[in-house]
Every structure is written in C-alpha cells, then in structure tokens.
Amino acid sequence: MPELPEVETVARGLAAALPGRRVVGVRLGKTDFIADPPRLSRELPGGVLRSVRRLGKYLLIEVISAKGDSRAQALLVHLGMTGQLTVRAASAPLAPHTHIICALDDGSELRYADPRRFGRVVLARPEEIEPLLSGLGADPLEISRAEFCRRVGQRRACIKALLLDQSVLRGVGNIYADESLWRARIHPARLAARLGRTRLVELHRNLRRVLLEAIRSGGSSISDYVGASGERGRYQLRHRVYGREGKPCQRCGAGIRRTLIAGRSSYFCPRCQRSPKAARRGSHSRPG
DNA sequence: CTTACGGCCTGGGTGC
DNA sequence: TGCACCCAGGCCGTAA
Image (tube, rainbow, N blue to C red):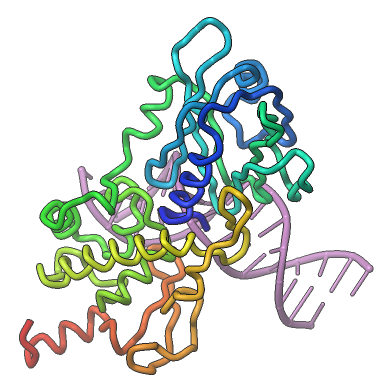
C-alpha cells in the first residue's frame, strides 16, 4: 500500500538511477491502466530521463523527447495498491505482472509491475498533467502547524476521513493515518472541529514524525510494496496499530480494535484513543 | 457547499 | 481439487 513514505522511497531510489539515462526501447503488457499506451511506445524511445520527484502519492519522471521537440513531458505514475516501479539489470528475473519495461542505455530496465492494475500511468506534457494534480492538498511534511490547524480544525468530518482526503493533505493513506492518530491519542471517529488546538498540534507533530520515521525505514512492506531496487521496507515492524487487531497496545496493554470509519478499516486502541461518545461524557469531569 | 456511502476495478488468501 | 467470498485503496457518482 504505497503512501507518502513508500512513494518517497521509490522516488529517491529512482532519482539515484534514472537521471541522464536514455530510453532505448519500450515493451508493454496489459495496458488498461495506461492513459494512452501508444504514446508511450511512440514518445519514450530515444527520450532522456531527466529528473524524478514525488507529489503526494504520485511519481513524476521528467522525460526530454528525442524528436527535436525539446519540450519536456512527464511520466506520471500512481502505484495504486500493488504497483512496483523498479530499476533492474535487464538480466534480472521479471516480477510477475510486469506490464511496462523501458530498456535503458546502460543495460538496466525501468519496470512497472502491478498485479491488480489499480495504478495509473500517464505520459503527457505538464499542461496536460496539471489538471490531474491541481486538486491535491498540502504536503503533510511541509504544512506549517498553523496552516494544519486551519485546514483540518475547521472541518466537521471525522478526523480519519480528513487525513485520507488527498485534497486536504496529499500522500497520507490508511496506515499512516492510523499510526499518527494512535501516537496523538485521537480516536479516528472524532470530528475534526471538536478537537482542541492541543490535540491538533499533537496530530500535526506526530503525523510528521511517523512519516519521517517511515521514510527512514524505507516504508512499510505489508504485501507487494518494494523500493526502486526491489528492496522491502522495514517500517511495518514498527506499526503500533495498523494490522494489529487483538494484539496489546504497546502503551497501555489494551487490545487493539478494528472498526470501519470513512469506509476504511481503522485500527486504534480503545483505551488510549477515547471514542467521541466517551470523550463527551468525560468532558464534564475532566478538563481539556 | 459539505459529508457519507456504495460500487467499481483485480487477484491473493481463506474457508468450506 | 475447486470455488465462492472477502478484502485491499482511490475515485467517482449519488443522496441528503
């Protein structure tokens, strides 16, 4: 489940391998997740890959065309749930469900594999890509504390739904929403507007912390996720709630629960993260 | 406008 | 051995 830390890890791996490489050939498998498959076959060969960056959960690989037209295009990739974007030696075995292979001029290959094909790939000019990205919210690693409180704290939706909303914050998914809420001791069903300034500041701090720690650990590998050279992440070893239903909370020992919030499995500690009802009941006897 | 919810895409895993 | 079923995450349409 590639979220911000996983996509960032892939972006860094690609940024170390791709810039300056020329595409010498393209092979496609299934193409129903590609916006305009013939365009890849037509425009990529001869093109030079110039830069790699991440925007939310999207990867943007800048491509300088070979065809006398020096205007850059970008290969936009969203990994969906099971997408893997790797650079491997051409001789390395192909992962199952590899659907895009770009042969590069140094004997390596840029490969996209995606068993479920929930990912998306678009090759287009910046002005064509811009509308796809214009709805994205703030980067959770860049947003200031004040801006975070303003954008999140004024809303009546439950906090988990807001964290997952890419138009509010770009890049947060189910794992890091649950992990940061546990660290900030906020129940996922709490309404954002009812969180105090203190809780919001705690959430902002812990969201940052969890994302940075996860990047340092190379992301979370639950099932399919791997980095750009095929390596698994290690942050799943440090999950406190995600996927730990029934296991003891590492802070208080209570059993971690799973419930459906905003249509998503949500893991939380029923003791450390008080439900909205319990918080209201307790608000008369407990200050703050 | 905001929010909630159901359905869709696909295939791996599970349980009968 | 097969097979129905559930689930994952993002996105979109619809309803209130």
